[in-house]
Amino acid sequence: MIRVESSADVVIVGGGVVGSAAAWRLAARGRRVVLLEQFEQGHHRGASHGSSRIYRQAYAGRFYTALAARALPLWRQLEETTGEHLLELTGAVDHGLSSTVLAKARVLGDLGIAHTVLDPAEAERRWPGIRFDSVVLYHPDAGRLHADRSVAALQQAAVQAGADVRHNTSARAIRETPRGVEVASDTDTIAAGQVVLAAGAWTPAVLDATTGASLRLPALRTTQEQPAHFVPLSDARWPSFVHHRGAELVGEGIYGLGSVDGIKIGEHGTGPQVDPDTRSFVADPDGVRRLVDYARAWLPGVDADSARVDTCLYTTTPDSNFVVDRAGALTVAAGFSGHGFKFAPVIGELVADLVEATATGPEPFRSGTRHPVVVS
Ligand SMILES: Cc1cc2nc3c(=O)[nH]c(=O)nc-3n(C[C@H](O)[C@H](O)[C@H](O)COP(=O)(O)OP(=O)(O)OC[C@H]3O[C@@H](n4cnc5c(N)ncnc54)[C@H](O)[C@@H]3O)c2cc1C
Image (cartoon, rainbow, N blue to C red; front, side):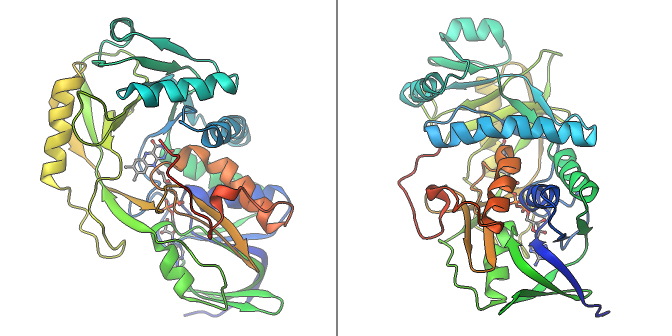
């Protein structure tokens, strides 16, 4: 092992979408940033890989709706900075449980965000690939992000702003010191003013390897999820969609969207609890069968026999609110509970505010405060 001492204003542990966004926003503010990522660029062991994630603004509460709306211009700024096309606005639809769908419509209305409420027949005329069972909410400022390209672009923008991004380099131990922190990595020990833990499912382990940390995480549950891609039967443009549990839909809700790999659908947070270092990457056959059955029943626009399954991690807090909080020289951004991707550049801004102590961060994201579930 080479031991070269180096220094930075901020060391960020974790190069998924959240750590990469924090690196971009902190470097853009003139901070000397080192980003440590234990695996190679584009790896598939965490939560941020693949070709697609839903970007939508419709949540049943104002807080996440406003936060998602704040992310849109930042995604566009990232596209301008890097010359990459990352976010395609295809619109999004919600259907299923009418009370949830209408609650979302109310929030969009309250915040002045464009939307339409349609009946199922009208929705089926517009999107013949989907069968609708209830009132349908459509909002146009939604669509899909290319996940792998977004993470790469965030890191590119961070590097353009002066960050030092190191792949295949683990943070092994962190020690708070009177002047800040020391982060021992595979290659050297970095003295820094502050450290940001954005280590996804590994965050509790990294916190355990931190001496002197006073921040306590809520219980984080790591699960292996398994979305599937299906071959579409036409070139029709697909909206992103969320089918909330409703009268006709048994079990959890389903999300879906078009992507370069086909029409992706998945259940939200139903996978088995796993250890991120020893998980199998093998999909649960019962879960695959449920997705195939769903496609056959609800998605006439896909070949239901063409499922290709991938696995990915959720790290979920007890109430599905994120943790973005600071204590001393340590800031944590974790627990994104299966819905964090769309917000990444705003989370980067919130992390930068915490590091610069210009704000205390939103109350729902404080590590010690938990709320009734407000997320859907
Ligand atoms: C199947 C699936 C579908 C999803 N769909 C959506 C969606 O449609 N819309 C949406 O908004 N969100 C969605 N999400 C959620 C979103 O993808 C996650 O919330 C987000 O990717 C979390 O990013 P992260 O950076 O916190 O975690 P990760 O991407 O897991 O990043 C953490 C990184 O830290 C690194 N690391 C850990 N320990 C160390 C260490 N000691 N040293 C160095 N590096 C370390 C890891 O290698 C990893 O790369 C989905 C998630 C899944 C799994």
